[in-house]
Image 1: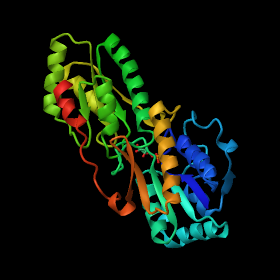
Image 2: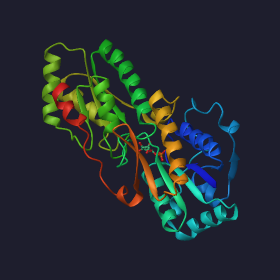
Image 3: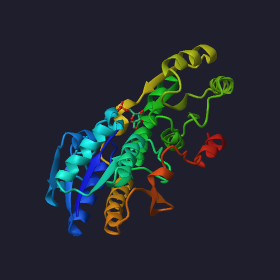
Length: 316
Ligand code: F6P
């Protein structure tokens, strides 16, 4: 069978491990694997290359995605998707493996409805995809954030400051919660765990009175202006505060072992699903096992609230 693979949406460390696994296991099972450049854009523009065992050599340890990625809002239009399907048909490519987040899944489900054999792999640092305990790239991003928190604590402590750290996650607080717990944050504010400003101000005043030299606040992006919050805290508590927006650094870097393994397992599992004539599904990891669910069961669903959220209140 001829299989195409693409990465789409925000890149995530471990995407290369997943592509490599699709190529290596795919060729091992006798398939031909084509890499699509820059996500759905490459499907529409017919930018695809045959990938061999050798073409993915050395990719396991590389961050980003060597195929490139993009966001293509026009993919919502049926004519644009039809072009993509026509391009695949012209090359006799029967199946597509997409690696990405929510937007990628939506595009994949629409292609599946149009008759293409599609499998989705969850690749995003946000860990916001239902049907999987973890997404490819999340663990590495947590590590990157923890490294930043550790460094920010050093300087906060030297200057006796409250450090506010804004992390990514879009509408999910998992990055903030996991990294905040690992980094010993005093406060973790996420969409699921809203800020109680009065309580926070009272506690920071108390810390100041006790002579504490630092406090760490980790907050998910898109909630509030962190620089304005730093000014408010300084004024209200007398504990000097500064904000750092970590930004795109969270998406880069060498994938950690968990993401290399997750990408390798998911990429191989996707090929094995196709071998068994299963498609129109997305892959997940549940209790350390590979699972798959139809796109319709995943898209638009909410992830259950992670039990770590309750830990925050008990140990912060
Ligand atoms: O979905 C991954 C993510 O990094 C989010 O955390 C963030 O909100 C968004 O992508 C940023 O996207 P863009 O690269 O389009 O600015």
